Length: 357
Image 1: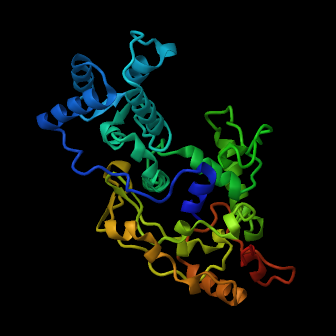
Image 2 (image 1 turned 90 degrees about the vertical axis):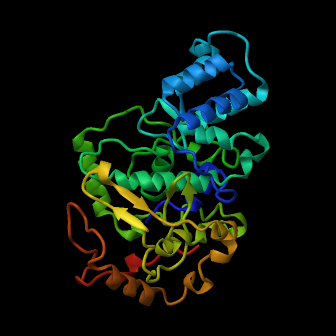
Image 3 (image 1 turned 180 degrees about the vertical axis):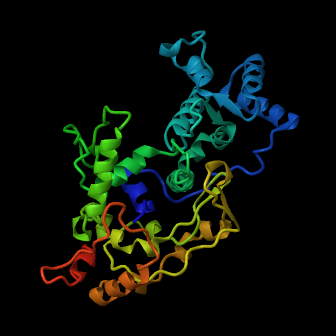
């Protein structure tokens, strides 16, 4: 299982198709790049040349501080004056702050890249970007680095990850939002935020044991089946390619999670091979680079899964093939190695079948 573009679309209601969220040649820290950064802040945020120079110098180049954004545009945070830039500049500042705190939150938590600001230059174009796909690529990358030794934090939009867990696994952790209004609020608003910020090890162990003990029949494979528009999954969910955010490119394999779309899981093709990969035990040495084809992204409808892969026929036989295929290719439970069995002790293949839409 994995977070899919369908999950992003359903939970957050943000675009998963559109222009690539990327700015070329914006990662070099030079005197020239600092000069360009000052001009960018001056033009797009509407501050004085003195303020722009001071902030870029303090931030050392291609970022601005979130506290600076708040002090300039949020009176409750102690704004230094009551004179505000034009509405367009204020909108950019708000979006810049919002994106850096949600979809593209990093471990630093105090700065935001000006590459994002450059994408906000034309406010009429903001809604044309594939923000959802970019957020998924960014989260994928940080989920990968979070598996390294000594990593205690994770970046990305964790509200998306949390919502995905609540949708697919009924672990008794979710707190329902009694005021939630279907078709009015984003689906992720169906739950309220938990108060606890740190979970003790005993509870973590309990959750792990619960996950290990789940049978396939106890997983909600297609939680959005009653919300699919015209009974059909968003077509982009079946795109086989590499979503991108800035210089982060990650593979997306819908053929490996067909059961989440209400289909039978068939044996998938081999995964995309990275151009470069350094997956050592430590996060600082974690580096993976995948290729990105702009034409493929722009013509995504030509790169959807073949219809024959999305079938409901011969479910048991295909499920059995997949079980044999996965044997030795995936991690087992951390607390138990038993296989679900029937009363007679035989493997219960019915537990391996997907829910039908």
